[in-house]
Amino acid sequence: MLGLKTELEVARELAARVRALRLEFGWSQGELARRAGLRLSTYRLFEQTGQIALVRLLRVLSIMDRLNDFEQVCLPSDAPRSLADLHMRKRQRGRRTPHA
Image (cartoon, rainbow, N blue to C red):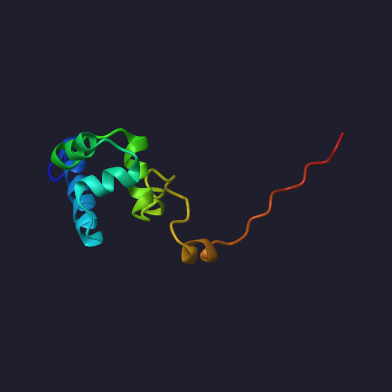
């Protein structure tokens, strides 16, 4: 299909966004790696290729106070995505079933 990105393209774009955020914090790669408990080589590889273990990525996002952004990934299509969505939904009650 046209317009769809490959997994590698998405990974590289994510790494570029994390790099930009790191620079906003004014941190070097070494500083971010230290704060996240990663080897510098592991973090450098992530910025260069987009490749990183999920748990390590979550650590990086956590120290940058962006872990909540990741919680939106792969939500069911009917899940509320914001407080406004949650308030707009009507409360549904289940039916009681008679006890035998």
